[in-house]
Each structure stands twice: as C-alpha cells, then as structure tokens.
Image 1 (tube, rainbow, N blue to C red):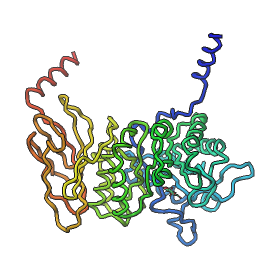
Image 2 (image 1 turned 30 degrees about the horizontal axis):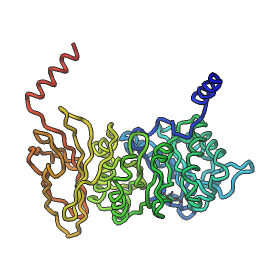
Image 3 (image 1 turned 45 degrees about the vertical axis):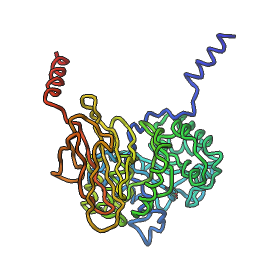
Image 4 (image 1 turned 45 degrees about the horizontal axis):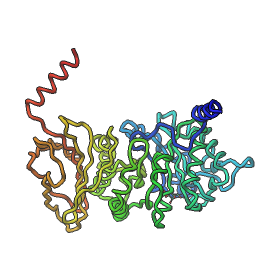
Length: 429
Ligand code: GLA
C-alpha cells in the first residue's frame, strides 16, 4: 500500500502538470514593444494604411526594433494587442486572424519576427469577448493556448474583459496549466488584478506570483502626464502591499512606456523612465518607432537606465520620501562594494511652478549610509557626475514634472581597494 502511494506521488511529480508557472522566463522585467497605447483598434486600413492594426505595421516595427538599436538594447518582444482576430472563429473552433489585415496569418508574422531575432507576443482574453469585442477564450482555453503555441507565440497577454472576476484566480491558473502542457516556453502576462483592484477586491498576489510572469495591477495608461501620474500615485499608495510579490520571474506591471508619443515632454519622459526603472516595471514601449524624436529615443535606449531596470538582483524600488511635491525613489542594485549596496535614486517633481526648483536631500534621510559616501552618476545627463561625502546631500535643481535618475556607488578608502585587489590576486593563484 505504502509502495503504491509512493509510486503515485512519484509519477505525479515526474509527469504531472502543475498549475504553477514553470517556464523559467522573465528573470528580469520583460522588454519590448506593444501596439495598444499608440495604435489602439484602428482597423480601417484603406483610410489609415500606416496606422491600422495589420501585418504590415508589425513587420515595420520589427524592422525598426532591429535597425534602430532597440533589440540590441534589450527590447526583444513585439506584442500584438487586441483587434488582430476575426470576429468569428474557424469551423473547428480555433481563433483566426483577420484575413484582410493579416493576409498571411499569425504564424507567418511570428516567423518573420523570429527571423529578425525578436520574440513574438499575442493578446487573448480570458472572458467571453476581448475588450474590443473580439472572441474571448473562456470556452476554448486549451484550444487557444495550443493554437498560440503552434503559431510560435513567445508571450501571451491574457486580458480579463467580459469575465467574472470571482473565477479569475482559478481560471487564469487553468490557462497557465495549458501553457505549461504545450511545452513551449511562453511569458504569461495576466490582467486579473486590473479587474479586481478597482472594485475593491484584493487579488491573491501569492497566486499571481505562482501563476504569472507579470500582471497588470491597475488602469490602462494614456498618452499624458496626468495618466502616468495617476498610475504612479496608485502604485505608491499600494507599494508595501504589492512590492513583496515582485522579483525574478514575476513582476508588477504599471503598463506601457508612452515615451516618444505626443503626451510627454522630455523631462516627463525621463520621469517615466526613472520610475519604471526603479519599480522594476516591464519596459514595454507603445509608440511609433518610425517617428520618434532623437531626444526621446535616447531616453528609451539609455543603457544605464535599462541596466537599473534589469538589475541582476531583481529588487523592486520604492518611493521613500516626498518633500514639497518632489519625490525620492530608491532601489538597491549591484554592485555591493565592501558590504555596502549601490543604489538607483530617482527624483521626480510634481511641481508645476514653472522654474527649476532647488532640492536638498541629506543621504541620512534616505538611509544611504556607505561610510565613505558615494560616487554619483547622473544617468540622463552627460558629464554631470559628482561625489557626495557620507554626511552630504543630494542637491540639485529639478525642472517642473521632471525626473532625474542617479546611480550611487559606494566610495572606498584606498586601503579597502588594496585589500580587495590582494584578494583577487590570491583567488587567481
Ligand atoms: C484593456 C487592456 C489594454 C488593452 C485593451 C485592448 O483595456 O487593459 O491594455 O489590451 O484592453 O482592448
């Protein structure tokens, strides 16, 4: 009897497919491009040939992701959001792409994206219909997951429109189990908290962390500073509750980067990049890569900001202080020198008084306590690096609604450097 029990357990362990996500993906927050914020559900390709949600749009974006250096900087997923499908399923029940806008089907598009060295993401919805009214997956979960896998999808965004919020925790887990069963590693982006939090239902973040690689917690982003600000306000209000669930393999998602569109000034774009980097948010751009001003492109491609976002430790940063409408954010990052961590520090102003406001934040108020102070790199500005002694302050002028991202590395005494050098030499021997 005991033997039988053991055999059953072992068989389950070896062959059983669990609900827990086991794809080994998203060690760092996913990076890519998604059409929704910028291109929405434009389906009239006759009137808007360059903007409609079509195979051509994604091919163009895939080309630019490579030729303009986004892929090289880490943006690897091209994600098709809502409005790609036909309103009717095929006779066998499977989803099909709109035949006019995607004449070669989704598999051909995924193949093209792969041929460029990129990965391919696709949108689905857990409920009866997608938010824009296309077929949802509720009665076809297994079939839809298998179809996506057969098409070569690497990332699924599963939205939650037209669905019962109460069943989402279990339903999303079931969908995730079908994803596991395909054997194809696909990033799983879930939206279920965005359908619970606004209705004062507290999502089960333990289950989210087990089930999904990333999850949309809150409202959709729009192309404005007000929208960025209101999303950030929600995340700050809830940071202590949601931060513990973020880390390698599973991330909170405040929605897309809107940098390079119409709505943000350059300082505001730096502010969005600063906060998203410190919050370890997925960096999914939604913009028109054919028409981005150089200044915005530089922000999106800033290697140091990206390195802070993708930092190997996978810590999530938080807002730690607000003084006179200027907020300070900190995140622990690599390297840890002589037992003292390095930090990314974000300073974001919500002031609108029309002049560069002088701030002064003593290191001790921010709990930054390396004994010999820090070397400070000003991430978005060239040649603006400086030192701060341990009893010093971060002092600078901040443009209204602007953001500054700093990287603080602990300074060492010469004798400490010598000790480290001798340890390295000993190691080599
Ligand atoms: C919801 C999502 C958005 C987008 C649209 C598509 O609003 O939150 O990100 O996917 O649906 O219809």
